[in-house]
Amino acid sequence: MDELRIKRAPRIETEIIVSGDKSISHRAVLIASLANGPCVLRGFSPSTDCTHTVEAMRSLGIKIERPEPEVLIVHGKKRKLSAPNEPINCGNSGTTMRLLAGLLAGQSFKTRLVGDDSLSKRPMRRIVEPLRLMGAQIEAEGEHDTAPLQIEGAALHGIKYTSPVASAQLKSALLFAGLFAKGKTTVLEPVATRNHTELMLNYFLVRTQRDEEGVSVFGDYVPESRDFSIPGDISSAAFWLVAAAAQPGGHLLVREVGLNDTRTGILGVLVRMGAQVREAIEDVEQVEPRGIVEVTGANLKGTVIQGKEVPQLIDELPILAVAGALARGTTMIRQAQELRVKETDRIAAIAHNLRSMGAQVIELTDGLEIHGRAPLHGARLSSFGDHRIAMAFAIAGLFAEGETIIQDVDCVATSYPGFDKMLHEIVNPKGFRTTTPVITSLSPARAEES
Ligand code: S3P
Image 1 (spheres, protein in one colour):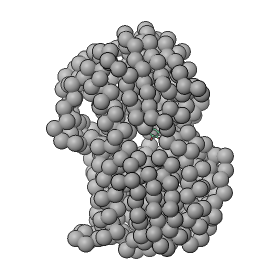
Image 2 (image 1 turned 120 degrees about the horizontal axis):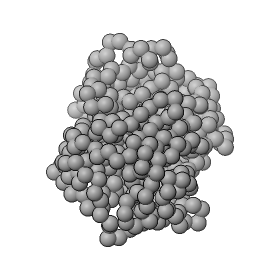
Image 3 (image 1 turned 90 degrees about the horizontal axis):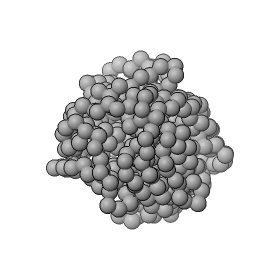
Image 4 (image 1 turned 180 degrees about the vertical axis):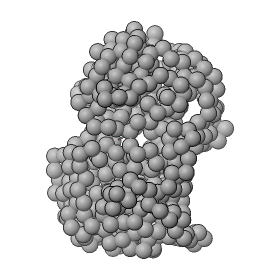
């Protein structure tokens, strides 16, 4: 699959399930590898990013069976890891590289972490500096404090670190290092980011703490081996949620999806834009809430996305920008400068592709100003090697006159290997189940926002 061809979609009326959450899957395999026995992980993300984390842990001496693509049996070795034979390849995955760097900083052996061209351009100083404060011996050998990372392995001590960037990867790198550090490691964030690491450490009975001081982990705990079931990835569901929300009369149900409120910012935005969004949490048994989201489409209106909402929908901004182009009025995305250092410069990529389709967009240093409702036309677009850009513009193509071609779409497997199949089913709805509304009451949080 090196290009995707998309035409205008018929009305969306369907029910879907998406694969396991990528962020949660990374953390699950890392923590299970440190546990005091085997852990079965169900609903593991089939993304190539998460497979890089699995391969990394195998190279560090952990036996991981994969009887099915989405089931792992991880044989935790009580925090004992062994030196890999060669550099660990993190591929395109920033989460793999940054979280592993934290985990490896406190081992007794040397490691080298390498990545693909895109990952080798992404900022690593944000983790290198605080890890050094903990006693780590780590070098970012690339030209601009970038990968490869050379990690010597050293005795670490806990610190209290005020992070200058809202980054769950940074926070998690320090928490993983903190597991191997003497004493308590505390991270204060400028704005709250996804909390999967701290929730999962808790679930595996590692002592953590959350208070006005920030989030802390205490060193020396061995995670207790337990099974874990990973909910569907709301960041994958986001593409279909927007596709349905922007079609008056469109109706979509997503089942078994993760509804952790540090990740559901997109739902509030779609409500503000005029879509009907309902959610029902059905299960919180294993610390990560999961449930149903139901969206009914409308003529969307523009909105402003900024401030503390940004980290809660950081990965959804490309598809929300597409929603902005389909909405009447102006959509502003501000304080989202982190988009410039994702898999590509997403602000530039979104502006370029939206303009190629006929939308009016102003590129800002920290975001985008999108004047919606200019009729979109098909175009030949680049993915810029970025999975979320590829998928966001495939959805834009469902609303454009003529054919849209997205080039270089192999990157989609980075997070969502089944995307093209689902797209095909949405465009050719033969045999699709139609749905009737199933959630009859709005959840209180979302009702307040509407
Ligand atoms: C992630 C955190 C976010 C997000 C990325 C996954 C994670 O990155 O964009 O896709 O799993 O911790 P930052 O922490 O760099 O913001």
